[in-house]
Image (cartoon, rainbow, N blue to C red; front, side, top):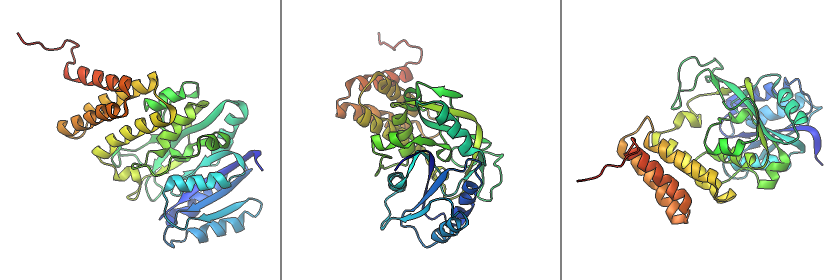
Length: 322
């Protein structure tokens, strides 16, 4: 049975036992009190996760708090999908087990859902913190995180699909609240992806089905530490993220003018990436064009080729020989 004002908090857990209790505590401090928690252990080691969830449940008997465990490691998308299927709320609030929420996080996002019936994704900014919970003031990790994370056009974006495809929005996962109906309609998060970009794919697919809303204020704290995926990124991985993202969304949502624009953008981005050798960047840009041709995506291949032309001849005038 689905409750229209219940929020289902989905927390995938894997090797983050030292942070789980603090994450749960931040859920327990929410000013919006109609929530349930589904913590999904993705067959991680015995690191105290189960004990933390059971202790939290005992301290909050008025709430449904479930500990679910996979019998084998299936990845973060599968863990989130397990939670989504077990959820009873109309809104799903994502939370990584090493992050934290501010007390007004759920209240602010539920106000959006109750006011805007066409919104399927609401997100906000997050303060970046280190493994000890201290605010990051200096660039940290591959993406130089510090200060606030999260961007977009404040308020409701009717063109969310386009903005997501162009990577013009950045959604800190632990700030995202989504319509469960929409999640079930598209089959949840993409599983089995080579790169951890299932969240990018989700934001784009959500934007195809409804409005995206951005709160330009921090409602969560995003923890950067040695085990963080963002802290283990590489130049080749960062470019490949974008390639897999665009092709995956194209497979799901079909070819369109927006997809062509996205193809041109990632080709340009690969060629002009601020890090990595020119040979490496050209290799990835060529990969985008060739994969488009192999799939028979001719319009998208032409968009990638045009990005190549503009890179080789930035003045807009091709060189000729006498």
